[in-house]
Image (cartoon, rainbow, N blue to C red):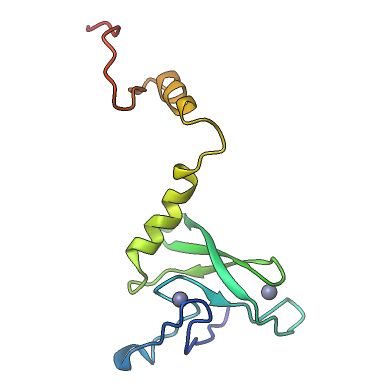
Amino acid sequence: MKKYRKINQCPSCGWTPSKNQEELPRDHCPNCLCGIHHETGDGLECGGILEPVSVWVKENGHWEVIQRCQLCGKMETAEMTKEDSTIKVLSIIAKPLAMPPFPIERLEDLTRMMGGQGDLGKRGGDRNEP
Ligand SMILES: [Zn+2]
Ligand SMILES: [Zn+2]
């Protein structure tokens, strides 16, 4: 099991836990989801900032933040907690969708191919009603 290191101040946004949050085990900042990279595998301290790059859901339904160390580039995961900022989580999920690596028009073609309604906003009158 991964051991948790409490963060007392976020290295990225400066967040600090309030009185009743102090004793919670926490390996990342609930405000911006950044953490501090402590281990490099050889028991050495890295000290780099782990910035959130994505979010994934495990088979058991638990959500984890995927973080990447700005210093050494290593990827880490951090289990999400109830106190994590929902807006921040959503913005991480929405980021690739807001900046797709292909023209946005392709999305319409793709959804049409999958049998969905591909029209984004405009209504097409060429669909046959059953
Ligand atoms: Zn933060
Ligand atoms: Zn690192």
